[in-house]
Image (tube, rainbow, N blue to C red; front, side):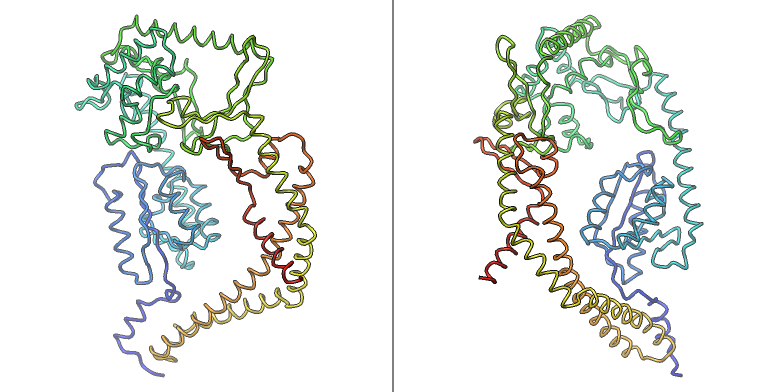
Length: 567
């Protein structure tokens, strides 16, 4: 048997079986809010450095993206960068994830285990956890019991942290310490004590102005218009300008004053020097999800900081708020004989300019004898033409337009149904005659056989049966054969699948046509079944985008092709 040199042996040791495949790597890094800023092994920089060093030592790992969730908990997977990584996996950009350790992936025992055991194999993802010595491509190195215990420990650790944090935060709230992520509008966190509020000289006068306008009897919409016209920054816009980025202020400079923002501000006791905290709650260690807490259970501590407005002004505003709320309730009851405004379309109906869902508005005719229902752009209603052009369409007119579009589409289907049936039968006969299913099975078996031979090449080289040059040549040849087989299988499967899809689409449209073709009134069920999106433009035009349109157009194209061939 031929002897291998020490240099060649070192090369072989570095080149492990199965590593001829190039992996496209997502470098995933996570740091929770509690650990943010700490200079330890879990810091963002250290995690990235560890992963990049690991990749540099493995020539078959090709980095395609860095995904950093900074300040996000590991107790669930609802994180922006994790979601972006999953989108890239679904798009075929990523087929390998590398993390520092399993706790970076998640601290929820059930969800982390589900991801490793089910999601990764299903999506064909290789997962490498460096510090745990865990690699899903090396089954012999992975102890399922060990991984389960590791995940369980992470879960217990997260719940223990949750219990301790909940107790500590409760104690701070009861001592009158402010624990919010950022100060309320009109205040700043004290540089000396982040749990103490001090007055913000830039925005406190705006708070006073808002309370004075409300005390004069001005409504929320008029106050919002005044503030937006005057250029006073809304809370979200102010945070954006000061570099505080949250999930709610990504629109930046476009964030304006709105009714709900003013409503919350005008009833907050923070402006008379008191703190009301603990208004929402969740508990990982008790298994309690996020929920709003009843007002009687809030943690309220008085005289914790300097007030911005007087108690008399605050009380006057609360009285006005109560009176307006009562008046609105009475008016609502007065016209209860008319159905409330309820849209058939939900978020499917949008404004062409601002993209927000159109709002259905009920208007009562003079004398209270009749109600009108219109769809309007909420941005225009709140901020006027300067922010978004006016759009207003009567609900009954829109319903009729959508109904006619749906029925026209179903009529086109019925006109072509005979051709559809012929098309499907012809495709089925062609598949049957060509033995497509059997051919696919045969090619798959050949693919598996050659893949096994390719994998065994390394062993043959190590045992001296093949030289290095013979190994490289044979590997390239097998890989080319495998790629050719893969393309041939994909093409046959595509043809087979297309034939099956045509039959499915024909049945789907046949069901829709039978159910809705002769409908006299548009219903929410019809919209749900057939409508993807409706766009309202400022010139009054309406774009109705239907579901399944791509498949429908493919069927039409095939039918036209079949007609042409048989002519």
